[in-house]
Each structure stands twice: as C-alpha cells, then as structure tokens.
Length: 522
Image 1 (cartoon, helix red, strand yellow):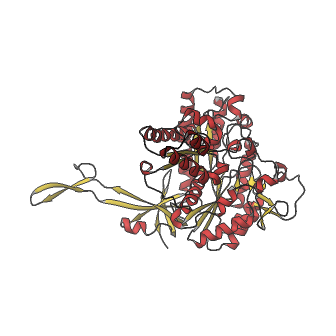
Image 2: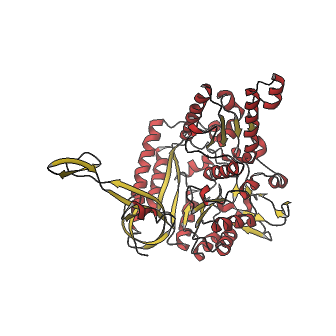
Image 3: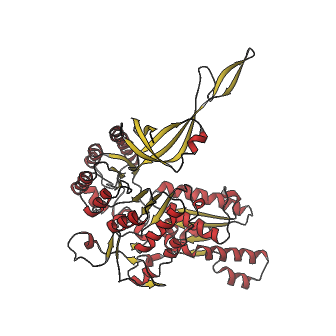
C-alpha cells in the first residue's frame, strides 16, 4: 500500500516539473512516506528525519515532509517534537501534497527576500509549514464524503510510463482504501479511514492502461481486499462517472443480508479484469481477510488461469483467546475451514500470512497453539513479529503489555524456526513440476579457490603468483503464480538481465526452505 502511495506521489510531482534524484542528500525536497504498524519502521523513519534536520540546522534550504500513517497518527505533535519538519500529510490527503510544498517554498522565498514580518506571516500560514490530516473526519460516514475523496483523482492521474515503476513489468492497483476491521493492535482504521471502494470501471480502465504500457502483472490492493463490494446507482457521480463509495456493513458478507441488485463483488471484479484485460499475464491481490472469503472468489480463481493461486491471509495467532483480544472476528476452527475450502477448490494454491507473538496475555499454551497451527497448515511463509504497543490503538489502552521482551524474542525465534521447517516441506512438494516463473531479479555470487583471498583466485603468470577476481556465478530469480521464489542459473549477467520481466516455463529441480531451484524448459 505504501509503495503504491509513493509511486503515485512521484508521478504527481514529476508531472508538475519536479525531478527525482538518486540520493536524498542532493534533494531540495525530502519526503518520507511512513508506516505506523511496526515500531522498527518508525525508528528508521525518524532516524532519516534527523539526518535531514541536521542539514537544515547547517543552513541548507531543504523542505522536509513526513507523509503517511505516522503523520496522521501523531499529528501536529510530531512538528512540536521535530520542529525541522515542514510538512505533514496523511495518507488520505496525498492529493494536497503539491499545494503544501508550494506554500512552504513560497515562505522560504519570502524569508530570503527579507520581506516584512507581516508579509512573511501572511505568506507562511503557520511558520511556513503545511499540514493536511484527515483527523476524525477520516472515519467517513456519508456517501458524499466518499464521492469528494481527492485520492480517486490521484489514482486516476498516475503515471502510466513504465519508467515510473522500479519494475516496469509489475504494477499495483488500489481497489479499496481504509479499513473497517478495528483489530485491537492496529492503527490503520484511524490513519487511513473508513473502507472506501473505487468504482469498478475506473479499476478496469487503470489495469488496461497499465497493461497497454507494458505491465504483465498487476497486484490489486486493499486492507481487506476480499471485502470489495460496489453497489451501482447509489453513489454520486463526478463528471458523469461513478464515484467511490463507503463499504457496506459486515452483514453484507455474512449471508443474512438481502441481495442487492447491480452489485459488483470482488469475484465479479476479478472476472472482469481477467476477461477485459487479456494481455495481463498475472492478476494478484493482497491482503485477504480469512473470514468472509466466499466460494465465488475461489471459483473465479479456479476458472481463470491468469489469476494467481496465492492467498496472503493473516492468521495472527493460533489461540482463540488471543484472537478474541485482538478482535480478529474468527476462531481457529473458522480459519482452518477457510484453508480446507481453499485447497479443496484450488489444490495448487499457496498460503502465506502474518503472526504476532507476545500479544498481551499470551500464555505458553497460547503460543504452543500458534506453533501447532504453523506446523499443521501448509504456509509457504509467514511474516512473524514481536508485539509492540502502538500509540493510537485499542490494545495500548485496554491491555497491559505483560509478556517480557526476552520471552517475545524467544517465541519469535522459535516460531521462525518452525516456519522454516514448514516452508521446506511445502517447497519440496513442488519439485519435479513445470511452472511459469516471472523473473524479477538478478543475483551474482563470487566463487573462491583454495588458499586464495576471499573473492580472488590464485593464478601463475610467468612464474609469479598473482590474484585475479574470482569467477561470478549468475542467477536470475522470479516468482511462480503461487509466489514461490525460484532461481535459475544464467551464463552471464547479460543473459540473466535479458530475462527480467519475462515469464518462462521452469522445471523445478530442488528445494530449500526459502526458495526453489529450476531450469528453463520453454
């Protein structure tokens, strides 16, 4: 989600004449797009903010902005603690960023020209700082508010030039924004706002334009992507087009709500993209909420060969008691029923997710239940995190962080080791199969020789021993339709790079815990 936000901001600013530079030390405007989900991410962001602040204290004219969830959560208090920050812009207000930059730039020019205090004060509008935060209004409750959402124009005005993306062959497309789940450990519903669903015509058109510009893979994004549901004829229109609309209540996914005519469900949207944009080789989506994942979605995936059989569906814990405190809304039995249903319809599917260890009140028995779940379900991988209290969440106020940090670390490492064993078993089941792989990275590894310095080999030239660079073994790596990482040997760096962005049929020859090795057969 943040990667797409950053791409849209780059495209927006580039279209206005801004030029991107390779190093932030050469930039006159430095913007950090932040995340509040993990403490480590925040620490890294603030370290970089501090480095730019040092440049400003040394007299450089640099505009420093903090974007995203951290800006929304901390608000103007972040500026009080870090007075060198010029701009705060929340994720729901990114369309206002050019205006904020322009205001700060004008204020700096005014100061440089030594205008009067009155003139400077009028121009700077708050000491030359720019703030665009949704605040409580981010929990939008009216269709009108969703229709006026400026982020839709930002999505629609994205740069379709392949050069705007790090991997020109792959692109992200947002289908929903915000979240209505209110998991107790998560701040996203407050920083990104209520669930807002984009009109399906806009989404399909965006996918088509990206495919026309060279994208072969598109990943549909949503905090709970399978909750996408757009009811036609109820939202306001903008310039004759349907506008974004607030997502329906949870009853719409429980089977006890009356069907609504002219509704595009997530399954319908997947089918439309698959049929209407045939040049796309792959259609992926993240992140899925394990409850409410309908049979209709699985059936569309089964019947649509270019939709990836990959589900990222976080379980978060193997204990019903912990899940209840997390407010996840399902039990382990329900999660396992979802997994069984998935593999019954999609035998070649792959499964991944997230787990949090050390959540308040997690006992040894709770943790062992999580370990047991990871052992018995075919997770190809899981992202595993230690719980850390996050400001702005329900959990930080409601629960005592009572699991010692050393216990959290031990549980984190233990679960990682169990997941490594599970990953190895899952990968081994794929050996011998021929699967399409989309190549996306090149790897080089230097060889070695006996008694040589690292990275060199010993040679004899005219009776003298010299050191020469070691030969490099090249590989090109990519991902299967199920997001399994596959490496293939290449003759040279050039031949490896020639495969980037291409999908080839690969025979899987051997497996490791984190990847497979294969050979191109077509």
